[in-house]
Length: 415
Image (cartoon, rainbow, N blue to C red; front, side):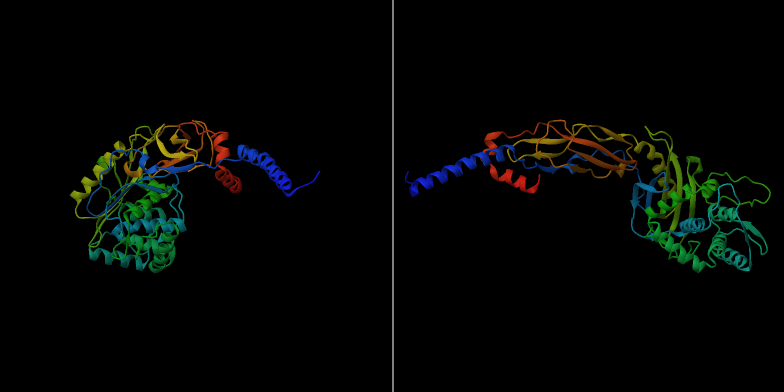
């Protein structure tokens, strides 16, 4: 048989055709499909907000929940949220930094602190200046617990200096240690210039002050003093509770003072009964630059009084709500919907923006978990699985055979 050029070409073309059909067909029919394109619409699916907590427009204010570890989660703010003078609230730093260096058990008086000439000189000077003091005499000894009580309950300026000198050697060395402690503990916007809060150099934010208050109520020794757990008896100093205010509405004052720079500064704690909570919820608040006590009393009473109502449960995630869409190149389309309802205490604006995570997929039946939505709240993160609202199915042989590029792209991308 004579082999002609045309016959050779024909055999080659036929072989290629057979080979193409044998390879192309299975490759297209069995190859991977490209992943669906996901578009998230979390902002459009933002959860409803609970009732707002009223905060004063004057000054700088923050209300926060005390976390289990002594942290603070803000639930409402008002006024200036930048760095402002903090006045006598700086004494909280004095107490916390000292206890971080020299801890005190709740039931212990701690070591004795001798009262020397410098301590008496401070007492006389602050008394002459008309600032808060508690009398001391050279040669006395005060227990660490009683000095803490004098600083915390009586806002005694001379005892704040005594505590700083006893713990750090000098007020100057205390200031250096305190500012290092503030930076290391996440209070970067707060700076102290003395142990008393009298200097204009004591500045910070209301949110930082609320965080310091949370640490104070979490510390066993300070919590015992605030709760009145220190029994009077032999060797226990009489310390007046001069910072107390609004106790008739369930408020425990932690710090209260007035300076020309900070005006009235007030740090406090309370508990609220929140619907759906397992027990009372501890809150802390801080207000500074408040012009008068009439404004302060109304602001604190309104904030604390509304906190429980603002915590009424809200549906943070509602089953069936769409948090995005999934669309395949062959035309199938479905919403990505939450498959579970999640409810949390409201706390006003404490609910953050939802975030959506979707595992890449090509096909999925309605109801199959393909990702999840996460919403941060003041009580912790809440999450729900996400699933397609309709089936996203294989496009079939005809589409596969006529659309080689998407399949080849999926093959080479490993999807």
